[in-house]
Length: 295
Figure 1 (cartoon, rainbow, N blue to C red):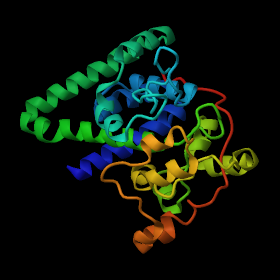
Figure 2 (figure 1 turned 90 degrees about the horizontal axis):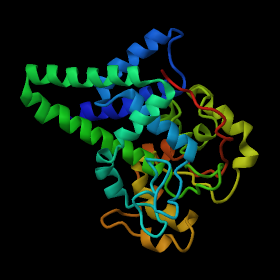
Figure 3 (figure 1 turned 90 degrees about the vertical axis):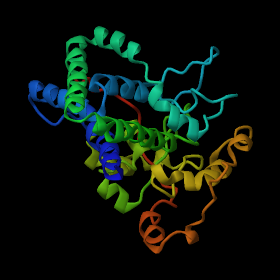
Figure 4 (figure 1 turned 120 degrees about the vertical axis):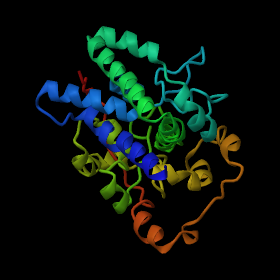
């Protein structure tokens, strides 16, 4: 199961994510076919995935309004109290159950994607029925746990891609991690602030975006991670102390059971490779200028 969860997470983090921004095929039909097939892989329609993701880019992990609502459905502030980030445990474990599919139906209707949404939803149902017919034991013991824990990891990644960020500052509303090994294996997903500024730029050019916008990004309050986002809970306390505002920091300064590890506590491989670029304060990109609508 761990391998299946990893592959599910990698698909959502890298393959599916990059596809909705820069579709792989010139043919619309091939792109639509991929979306249908991949909907089976991730357990929900890709139209829903892209709808929530583009809202995430549009509203940038926004804070709640006067009514306590956020426009970004994946905002880390949505379930928090007193304007604070939600606790990472509840954000990650409950997040997979908070998806607003009805909002996607309305959005798909406005964009003319209702047919594609129906095709993808049908594919998900037929795929599940096929798996059940083959082995209901597999569905209960492998498929459903893989889907759940895979989405938990997706939420954990998103949490620390924004924890400590300032939603009102487009150059500091996300975090970045510049470890070479991680970015090599995960198609520059560590350049998350850069990606938010220019989401339509191909993943291979995110480092170039960082260089182009270095002056704007070079500000002391932008969070530079010392660990890849999924492991950044190891660095939670430092992020709070170093980057977060005093009125927010006390409530999140301590996570029960999560140690405040220093680089010296890490294996040499992580300390020398993954952390080598993560201690720098040089920064990333520009403004979200456009959205790619996949249909």
